[in-house]
Image (cartoon, rainbow, N blue to C red; front, side, top):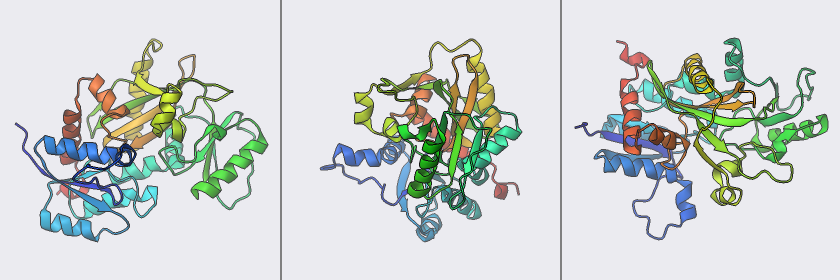
Length: 343
């Protein structure tokens, strides 16, 4: 029987689930569904669980660790102080406090969260990724001749498909300039422009520190593509359930893959995980052309752990139920050899 633990669950300050859901609407629950699923399941598994909402201060976190002495912090943060890339600093702070935590280490989070840097690293390791260019805020837009249309324009830092819509795929210089300006203005970030890869979108979930386990490839199904729409995972396609139902958008275990592709994705996912110094768990996103050629889009540290989402579904498909998945995430956090544990 597994030893029960004191677990401090770190969530954004607006996403702390209420203890009683009476009168709470489905739309409201959807906002904190991941947090609710994780906390509820951990309690069902017998752990002593305390959620902690974090905004732009770490004082209460330090106090909770000092007074409550959690055995591990279950990290569900996706930002700190409103900045997506700052969640890595919370994890670094936990390491300074010599506190165990779940998910990716600070170095892996920094490298994978920085889409430009991660693509530069993957290119160095000769891992296939779409040709790209970066357009910095406040600088003149000069389009490199090496880029070939159609192009895909997104934020260089934001995640969860923020700023991504059908207009993100452009086929001429005028639309490209307009979309770059849109990203600069609406996401307050640099714009990352990469060649659009037509094909299937596949995800490979990974668990592990030094020893890595991959889960079966999972596929995002784009459903009905009418009126010249392109197959991209827009914000609506990923997170709007009504929109998903209306357009038959779903995800499932990848079927009818070309011979050898699953093995190739497995090898690439492992190489990427190690190249970006990741730990805990992650999801690597691929585009695969009709001829079976894969391209890495990005690696996501600490992906969504909601019970009814891709990562948990892929785990269930591999015979790992939700409770076992969370226990595995905790075990990996306890086993991670941070610098302070090298003494």
